[in-house]
Image 1 (cartoon, one colour):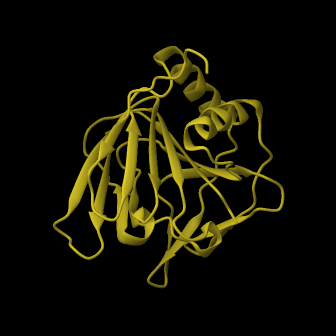
Image 2 (image 1 turned 90 degrees about the vertical axis):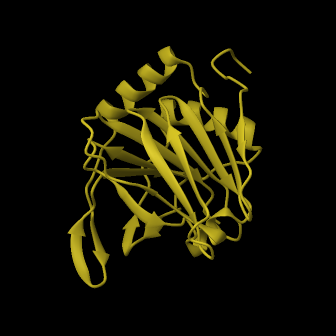
Length: 200
């Protein structure tokens, strides 16, 4: 594998979860290039989500890329994928080498500033199958990522997702834990998050 990849891995000792974090999956130069390319070239959209019967604009922008015929649905949104481009294919191949999996789909999220967020949820949609593997890459501003156990609300973990980092969640994680990217009052720049997944 090329020199862009760093093997430093942090594993979190959490019950009913397998979570691995690579702080510098891509080096700074490559991470900067990826961030600028994705920011400019992605056809970002802002969908409405329905929460308890009320419609809201999603507090972030999104885009879906993936294999033909693999739509993805969450929060009453059905997204049709754009075809893979060269930068996302390159990233996908790097991530697949580590995960030993072939991903079908990537959901991109653009958090424009600290007001953009993603509330408590699990990536447990039925089309992801049992015990899905989710590979999450971060580019741009660092953001706090919170995890909370479904049964024991005192079981929590906070991870700062840094520029160029990779977070892998697998095994029972999505069934036993929720996660969020909370709002922050700090003045921070944009962050792009890529979550690779396998739609069955």
